[in-house]
Structures are given as structure tokens and as C-alpha cells.
Length: 254
Ligand SMILES: [Zn+2]
Image (cartoon, rainbow, N blue to C red):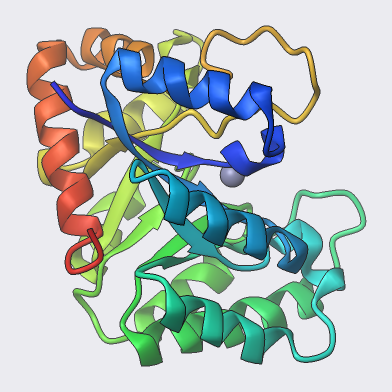
């Protein structure tokens, strides 16, 4: 059965044996598609190259809110040409009030230009939103409804899920929901409609050598297993639905 890792950064493993090991183990585990998200402009050539060489790697180009400061020069023009050259998404983009030294006005400017571009080109956005739901909702409510986008590592309240789903949201979750202490997260997971649910590894972890079991794309199989336990579902069913949901999110691009 095919699995989809809806959000990762495998390019950060470098273009060498570590990356080829990860991709090989993913293939063996049945992970036949993954959304590889750049975080800043200098990632774009490698992400484009990986998606050309590996059919399982789906390219996402964008500037992550933590890297908003690096957006300089002709970045927006280059972003548009990267998107036009590859059937790709905008990602990882968004807003983060919790990151140390957050320059929110700058984040908002960089995010809003990228969201406009996604709208103009009709490409899905892979969104990061941490403690900035007021601003994020205001932006999403202004967009034409029904265009698919992904809220990666969804951390918002369960109560927002129906409105977000109406606006076109897909929601992805990592392994954290397996922790019984994460009550808000588990409630949100249970609130997501079955046709909008996705799973991710966000691999590789920020710190090298971190031994998280889901530290690479193959780990998404275990993420699905854990979510199935939380939801009282069969993992095969959940994986099948998540695969279909991935096709719907990436419609016309895969
Ligand atoms: Zn990420």
C-alpha cells in the first residue's frame, strides 16, 4: 500500500549517502510520495533537482517564516519561475509568533506575497502556523474558497477545523498525537474530516543525530499506525484515505 509523507525537508539531509539512505528506506517502506519543503531561497535549486531525479519527491518552493529575513533581491521573481518550471507547491510558508525574535510584520509581508502568488498560479500552499491564527484566518478568509492547502503539523484548536475545511484545508499530523498528554492536539486530530486527513514526518529533525523514530520519511508508516490507535481506526484504511487525500491536495500536479 502506498504512503504519502505530506511534509518533510529531506533536502536538508544533503545530497549524499544520508539522503539516498533515507529515500531507499522510504521506498522499501512503501512511502512512494513525499512533499519536500524548502525553507529558504538557497534550498530551491536542490529541491528542484531532487524532484527531477526522484519521482517520489514532490517539490515545494518558498520561504519559511523563520527565514523571512533572508528574503532579498529578486526572490519573488525567482520563486515564480521555479514554480512555473516544476509542477510544485508553495512551501513551507506561513506565520510564527512563537519563534525567538519573531519579526511579525516582516513575516506577514513575505507570507502575503507568497500567498498572492499561490493564488495567482493556482498552486497549493504548505502552511506553517504557530500562535498566529488570527492573522492566518484573516488571510485565508480573503482567498477564493475551496482551493486546497495544507496546514502542516496542525496546532490550532479543534473548533477551527470545520471553518478551515470549508476554506479548502487539509490537515497533517506527526507522531505527537500518540502522547496521551497532548489533549488539544488529539481533539483536533479527531475533529478532522476523513477526506482531509494527512500524515507527516517533518524529517529530518533539526538537530543532527536526534534519534526520533520518525526522523525520516519511512517513519510515516508508524505515524499512521499511532494515529489509527488514537482514532480507533484500522491503519490500512487510514493510509488508503490519506493517499487519496494527498492526490486531492496535489490535484493536477502529480
Ligand atoms: Zn516543516
